[in-house]
Length: 483
Image 1: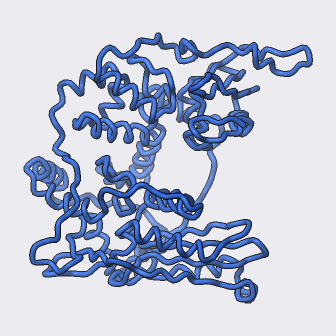
Image 2: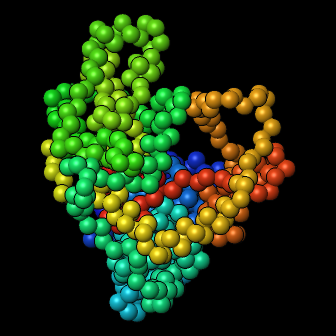
């Protein structure tokens, strides 16, 4: 076990995942460096493998902090007299021989700041201005984080496509020098809105959209965001309840309800909101699972929300066995999204352990008010006009052949199918992404468009693609509906 940037890491787990790659024969991961430790992976393989392919492979199986900074391919592992891998004989990756790029240090203040941002996002210590962002383990999510940090540091708006096209610190620094100031100023705490009741604020565009969708017949739990987690060990029920109430106190979204005021969808931020935990005792649990198991318990827990009542979150706790519980959390999408769930889990762990969290400078309602003001600017109005022209006239409807007649009333039922691609196809997809300078996601999206075209015979197809929607650096730690 080694400690890298504050994280305790089992190098054996990284080796185990590397060996799942069909082309790798042997793998060993070691920590190098003195004060600034970093991970380096050494491997032998049936053919030459690129760093970007391996980082992408591990990125789908391990958290970012467990991805090695360097990958070195060897013809054969050095062995001791006992036929064990001789760690001391492994070559030093410094000099970036494994990445085939000559190291050139930053030449000016912009390049130095960019190098610091890259180090933070990629977890790589030594970064030259001609290194390729994606060769160092970058991907679309990290590229989004890079755009956000550039925005925060230089108050300059760089597009995501710029990162994919330019890829180096030298090139991005040149782009920053010629880019104008961003229209995105810092988000300020919102003042009470004139002629609106106390605690009432305009909803964001995403919230307005979802509030209307929530009126559809049969929507039910279509926009609930439930999660169930098994907990082993001693559980302090009072501390659990106290922790959730601290989160509600910390994040205004968790004590926000919705209504219509003077024809406008409004979010109402309450000074407080009490959370009652649905507790199922061991005896009650045994009785319930006679007819459907834990699935029945979770299904009964997930039920529709009334958007006019806060909090739009509920928590349940089922005592399943001695020293075992299932914690159930459900939130309405109008106050949350996928990144919000990550924030909730991370902050819950900190607060439950008795740690304190830095105060939030702004809340979701401040973003919503800022966004409504932003939509009145000429720059955004121009963007709006562009998209209205793109979708002028009849928007193409996908005429998919189906086994059954489409029902007159929309159903919100759905399902999920999990499957794995074989080694050969996966390698081909990754190779195509590398050859075209794109990400695996972009390749899969293109393939999906082709598939839809084959089924329908249509070429003009509209596909919705979810994004995090947190373009402004002030939004990173806020629970709310940005996606």
